[in-house]
Length: 289
Image (cartoon, helix red, strand yellow):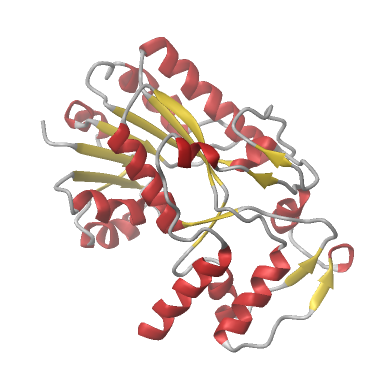
């Protein structure tokens, strides 16, 4: 059977992965919530369907791999709730089942280190929803004998997303909160990690996907501004900065995330080991455009 991957939620990360698969002769099927993105997804050679809506169940007998990239909400994981039994029935057919989660499952560690064995104590609603979704997929995979691979992604940046995009849009802010650090990952390194896992296969595992340097967000914004030759945004103390509840929630957690497992178990060599290399690569794309 031709290698066929079904991506639930063909968004930013999947858009970086799909060309790698297509170049190796894969059939890539992606879902989106609305009609407006179908043309863009199909322009990249991906078969696109609206879901919920289109009859995705009819495609399941044709897939060898599934990537789950839809965020849960207060009602749970939408794919698990709507198609859990049908996916469980793919045991023996499904070679690889991937779930894109987030490092928010670890909660706040006041700048301390976490790895894949750290207890999950989320401090935000989004983190709690992810913990519940992970547990649901783990239970289904255990019961059905499916090879589940969970990827806990740090803050994602890349072309059109991250500090450059915010600076160019005039929305970048340098919020200063003492001791605050975030881990990040370039979208191309997410794609490379997923490819490494897909090629290796196996029974499954849990992987943190981040670069080697957790850093204060104001340092990243400042460096990006320097690369673009733009004014560095003024520093704003966190306790005086008016922010939305969503924006403020990102500052509720501070931690450094270890990525040894993707290197030692999957053999991943990061193209952008820190934000410095990542932003320089993005700057080159801007200059070459």
